[in-house]
Image (tube, rainbow over all chains, first blue to last red):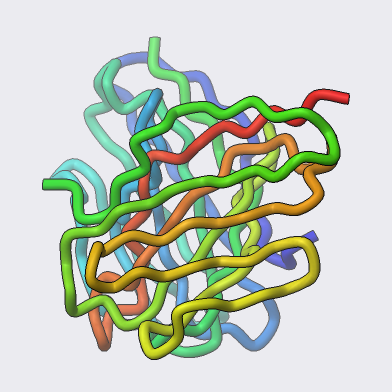
Length: 114
Length: 113
């Protein structure tokens, strides 16, 4: 158990819909990262929050947004969903905002868009 | 442009033998590298890392070698065990202040009894 909790584990929704994925980081970790893993792809970095503030953006679509709340949990919002958004979405947390600290991953949310 | 590449999607080895997983990178500014292991239905878990000032780091059965001139690193598992069967990802930092990681596509290792 990494200490990072993601809900829900599975999500099936229709095209055009909007979903929210939730992540609770390890106790004491201030950084939260979101990654997307599509079929046959490595993990693609989406966005990084540190102590409530956006720190870095990766390959995140404009239809996607995220936030980190005062209690440090984070939510990833995916809207106007398309079939190609079907993927595993991972959240990871770490103590520091950068410089090499190890990241701990949740079990992921498997999103299926039909 | 992939900055971290794992060109072998899969590898099969016999139990007790050595497993060698390879990773190439293009950015000479990377100052450390990490390997993560992922079982089905689980998130990736950190396995071992290496700083760019070293050429080898060992942790039990796992050793990572770094060849900076070739921009190549490899993970050696000796001896391989069936429980090592998983997908292995090579990763490098996205930037000094960013903290995110750039991952390769992974290599699926199967260790046969």
